[in-house]
Length: 266
Length: 235
Image (cartoon, rainbow over all chains, first blue to last red; front, side, top):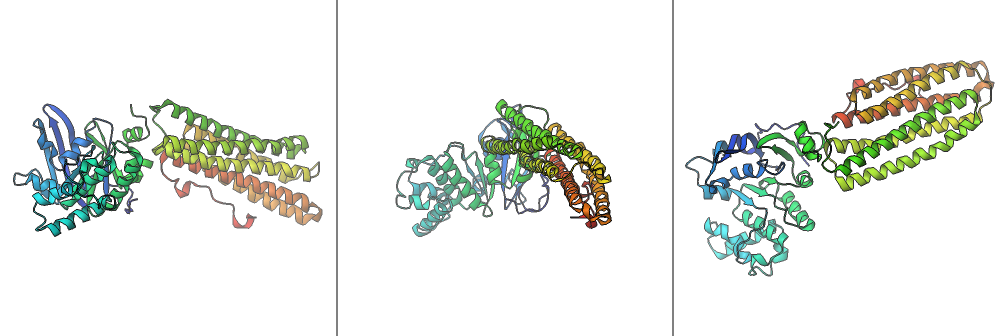
């Protein structure tokens, strides 16, 4: 639960902001998917984005590490900063940005390589290890932080794709952690997993909190309630309400938020 | 509390309305227990008193059923926001209303131990006091059913009148006992009746606070709550 004592959280102006978005709009061709969203992502907290399908929560998440750059028709307006640095500035190295702002996707997507190589891939291309010993240390530390080490330490040369779905997702988290990111974005990381694997990921999110700023998009409101300290509700491309998770789920201020979380949405 | 919009899952709405119905029924039975117990006391009607005592079992059974249903809804529907607050309120209100029923039963039990043909001033005061407390119970359960925070606040404000009656009855009975020690047994019973009614007023106030929370999501401001009886009359 939150350590915050204040009753409400405004969407912007947090002294603890890791990332700040101001008046961000996203267009796919002529269609506007996000309409002037301003929000701060806290350094020490897990922030959940919730909302019905097509509300723009995933689109907005992807603006935070410029994943939308890969879609030719996508256009982003407004300003997004990481520790005060404009991530859409021309001087920003996108590869470097995505190392600082890592991402975990809905469907686990390990490379068709060994478990070891999956984790070592990022540190290798970013030149984070000078020798095999250093790389071994990074791989072990990342797998441990991802809660997977005990299950795979004796078979690091097995293919990553041979793991179970839940293990594959934790491998993907280990891969994201390996490059020592500052922010981890998770786009429905548990929607393809069974309840036990989901619980392990949720426990992992809890353990990673504080070390990394975490933003999670989830369709599962119970999950948002369980893992996050801040919740943002998106609807039709706008940010409807942002606040302490405890407030959003017990006493939301906006009717649209309440109708959605109580299952009255349209 | 809600926007009038139904849940996407209609069965959830059905479960909620059944629960509200059970709470209303509990409230109706508890209020009736108080009214009939006071009637039995005034007319020394032992049969009526026995019916009140026997009727308490139905209230207890309803409480158990409400508890079971709330747990089911929480487990199966995972209610959120106003739905969640309403479930928590329903659970707590059922417990409090059951207590109100117990106080009615306790008054009915005393009818057997008291003699016929009293006409003390205290008995008349007790009837008026019970009327207000009974209305508080009635109105606060209406407030729950209608999700009306304003009515809940009004109920809280009326608790002061019940407390004033209690203080007045306390003084009357003490005077009566001092005048003639043979009145002490009878008066002591009436003192407990007064205390029971005073507690019913307090419980109605508690329910009002829960209704206010369920509707608004906020705690009822302290100044809106009724005060307790003065220390002099605290039993």
